[in-house]
Image 1 (spheres, rainbow, N blue to C red):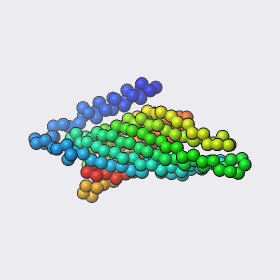
Image 2 (image 1 turned 120 degrees about the vertical axis):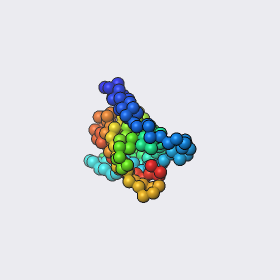
Image 3 (image 1 turned 90 degrees about the vertical axis):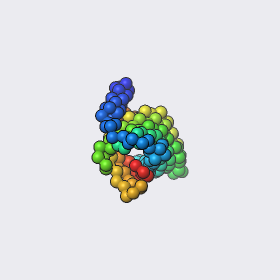
Image 4 (image 1 turned 180 degrees about the horizontal axis):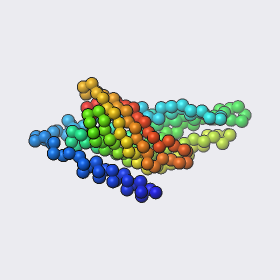
Amino acid sequence: MRFKNLSCFFFFIFILLFTQDLSAQRKEPIPFKERLWYGGGITGLGFSSSFNISLLQAGVSPMAGYKITERWSVGPRASLIWSYYRARRFDETVASAGPISWSVAGFTRLRIIPQIFAQLEYEYQKEAYGTFDGNDILIQRWDRDNYYIGGGYHDSAGLWGYEIVLLYNMNPNILVNQNPLDIRIGVTYKF
């Protein structure tokens, strides 16, 4: 299953790379600094509660891109998510834990039209997940490989802009019943 997902991921990268119109390059080279763009957003923001345990999450997700052409970008993305678990024990005292999950990723984007883009992304994630056994909050950690495919909408007013991205994770975590859809909202600079 893992090999199949990896094969699909590289197949889509191949399609993006070789369908890109590279003939529209400028005659004079563009300096490296002018090809860079930046972005980021709030990740994992939410609150949930079930039985005797509640969860509050918040995180940040910065990214940087390099424009290979005017339509095609590649770059890294990182994510840091803080989770706060709180539960009431049988003796009415409170247990709490605040684990941190993090990830690093590489992405490629292709602008289909100025506001719409397609995106592929590979992410290595160190995920922390809490469970409550009635006495204490137990933190489990997983190393995960996520393969995302999807797209987004981008709009800007000058150098600053915003984006809404919808990605499908081809390798969701079935142990915690993770939703394979990932919705991201963020800001960009020079995209």
